[in-house]
Image (tube, rainbow over all chains, first blue to last red; front, side, top):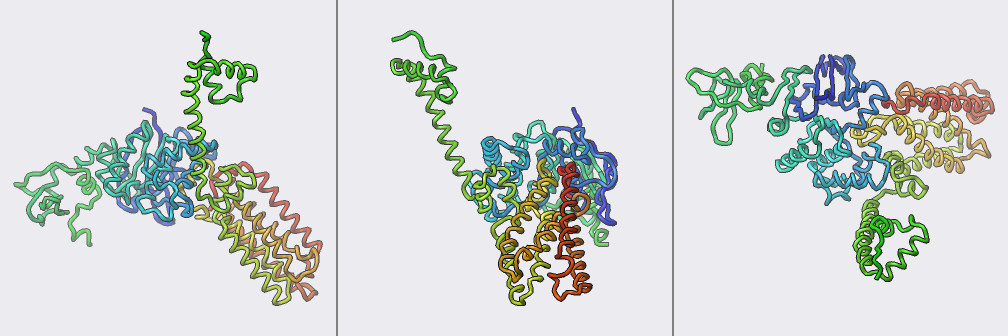
Length: 288
Length: 277
């Protein structure tokens, strides 16, 4: 399968802070989930892949083009759909006008074709009924869907989505998953999220970033396997657990070194992520 | 009844784009249609969707135009296509409220000049207004769409510069109107124009290589310094009579404006590069 994105030893600093530290990554068509805590460098990496920020060191190649050159950047942007973590809007525009505006910026010059495309993507995200409503009067979830609509213009080959499901209610998140599966067939999708169930539902591959570096690259099942033999259920919080919480069934889910005479349960992606991220440390250690 | 019927291809053409068919053929078709019920029925089937499509397209256009703002409406009336009109109308500084704010600032400067009976206040401050607006048009956040817009092929120095020129034009028109009311006689009331062009075009030229907002700040500071120096060294009591606003000074400013335009024009290759912030 063709490699869409090649990232080689990419580093990005903000003052003395290293946001992205020597990252290597290759992306191919399909949905890749990007997990990591706040400040791990996910958004910075995505901004570089979306051509809105440049690395300080290292090399990027997207569709075989170098985003550091004007021509390369132009070719990449022609095939890119990008949703930033905090999308901006012209609040005085209606939904239709805003997506139309982005469509103009995406070189849709024929008015009738452009308007048809705008209506299509607004329908995909379920905003047809409010297409003439001012953005300032939309709810947070509607604004998120509007941001997703502009990403889908022209059915791009590369979708860079920074926390697209933040602010969506459970039903909208399910619709988003359905949409991503159907609206971008064959595309390369990089999806940053804090929702591990989104990763489980959507991604064939997951990458975990911690403190600016890649710490895991594999399948969701492989990530879950990181917690294999380290998760057990109990009626009370086990003091030997590094991390524990009460599940919907009222039982405690404990993560840590499995005590003797305890039967482990099948780990989830979230368990694997927590073990990898080191969150599953004793509270005393975390506090220290 | 004739055994011959209008071929499908011709019938589709006649029903959808009758103007594309030559007059003789169209007349033959019409004559045949008056006598052939079968072709009449075919035409009815074909023509109805075409008519419906046309009506639907008109309705959609009407809906799409709903809520178009003041700036975009006027740009359309001036002959701009919908795309460029939307791109310019998306410029915050070109919205009605922003233009009125500029008009109010200019009015305030005019009133101060009139109250003090000192036209030099207007000549000194007027060039700063378009310069600041041009600089701000390159500032981060100048386009509320932010990175949604930035990651598109059209966004770049060229678009921002076109917006900056639009802002510049509006500011110059407002200032020109304001200059009619300042207490300066004749063409000397337009003494602000060349400094305004030199500073604002200098800001654009600076944006080719450096940050335009920083260039605007530096040029404005330089302008204030020149005025202070001119006032301090001039034998004349009024700034209007200083070297800055005499023929020599205005010639230098005209040269600077021309040089800035030349720099921008000869660096067209950067028009599609990332905006420097």
